[in-house]
Image (cartoon, rainbow, N blue to C red; front, side, top):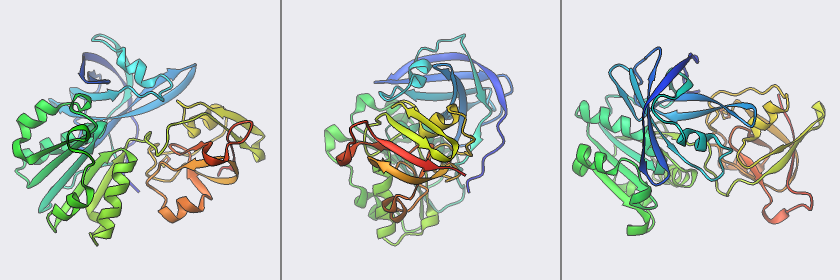
Length: 330
Ligand code: FES
């Protein structure tokens, strides 16, 4: 399982907030107890939405002056319950409650070659890695994939910093990104690090495995909120505990269960560790598996799901009263 340092919560003050691409704000904070953030690390921010406490994770794009200033970037998502909207209202002088940097996507220095792949807002996790690899004169290539340049943050800065090591791919200019070509073109001894939407990551994982590449040389981090389908509200019930509650489109199944008083285990809250897994007893609807913990066979089996990211959609089996997931926990 990924190593995660223990949460240390602290106050931080916003010192910079600006729009860096369509729907993306860069927010720079000064934490009270600064700690340098290693590449691939993130901070969790504590928010209150509709009276419920929630935490959201944001990759550290940049760690300046031993962590005295940390930059994160926030994409406003349409399914958001208000977390990203709230983050977009922040201005210099505002205060946040956040953790010290947490690490579960470490960069291993010393590989013969690196391929970095960032999809959309995934650049927030990858940009810091690219900067460090440049500073240690590593052999690396940075592939940055997005729908259009105007929706891709930090393009000018990355072009200036990485020159021809950067390969920019905007779907509206060059069509679908060639994932098999990416894997075939990677040096035989390369390690690949990626962060992006689940469709891109799934395609890279399949190509990587299909090419017979070493699984341990493929490392990734998920957004934790990108799925195969748009998020829909659904009902969850836990008969053993007498719990029945709604899961709005902007709230995870895990959060809804916690808010209903169910004692849930969790760690990454991004579909990576499997600690939040629940057992499906009955289902009216279809599961939108959004984790990278279970195998494809386990997803198809449908007996379990990761509550922190996976959801239910109506799909082909829409029930009159809406989708209902019946499960057990623990
Ligand atoms: S908490 Fe890690 S997969 Fe859900």
